[in-house]
Length: 254
Image (cartoon, rainbow, N blue to C red; front, side, top):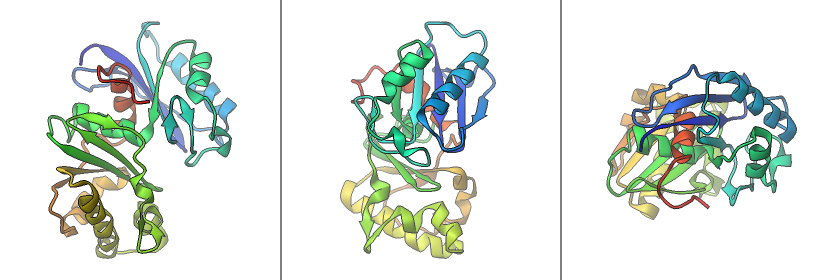
């Protein structure tokens, strides 16, 4: 992987972007962050994304652009919507962004982008076998990588465990909502990661999300066969992964 690309990470609270050096994973411009418009409706998010691109000065007009988004993305269509307007569901979102930005883009799920960032520049780089990225936040996002190749749209945070959608019990939001101690939360995480071991026999777990800054408080409490490590890239993971996906040499995601 070589050259540069723009990565844009659209989230429920902020839209971030920068130009990325694809050899090193370094940001070559300041990271621009704009608030996600209240309600997260399509027209407003598209307009904010255009504004962000305009603030990234000195870009090559032919620079590849990757955009990651909090939804299941299949053939450029958003099939779900997390912390944004439900009006995104069923939209040909990739086409909408391409029209708004006036250029071709690569469009992907945000957890997939974060996982691909770790495979390209972080904890999963050079890992043989199956690596599973998990982001612990408002929900639980997941990405599956096999020898660095992304298997898109793995919604493993919605596995039913003990009669519950597991992200409603084991996300960081659930920890805060239920006032759980680290050990109590680890008991819930244990069930989640153990189920993934049984189903997928992974070679590595990577834990991202803002709470991963405090990984020493809970990761050592987990009793797993699979190694589990914190993500290297946190706030920049979506940007890096979206940029890397824009120039991937493997077959298209969808």
